[in-house]
Image (cartoon, rainbow, N blue to C red; front, side, top):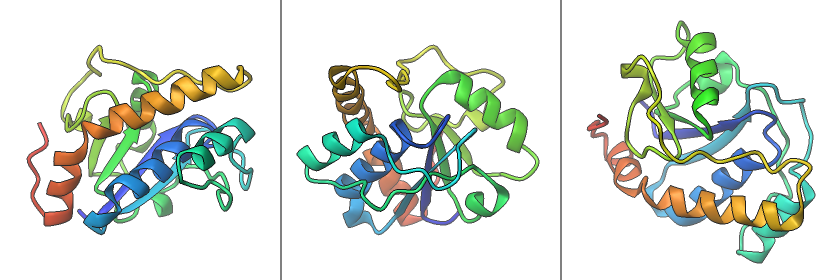
Length: 166
């Protein structure tokens, strides 16, 4: 699979855009392409205000973000799709198993390919902060940054063409 990683959540305005921006900032040296989409995303909406504030405070930007829905075109040449919750990955598997043959991950389970399993492991999930306080957004964004650190080996392997997903 190609060197692209797709983060996804429900609406593609809070969690997945932050994961995309932080991954690009943290792992940009690997030459991978990081992108995001949503299972139920409205087309063209900007990132949530509080997600944008967090991004700016940490040296990234969501200014150019426009939400989009997962589609076969979005999935082209993607090596990993990474959801924020177990239900996201379950929905993804049921909707896209016929059009996507790459690795299906959960942010809290680095390197575990859920496309090779019948269930998602009980691991840390990233709750939706939509409609919550600025503090809730900040905690979710910090969690995303922390969970992304666990993906370094997997992203390095994707960049070098190795596939050692479990």
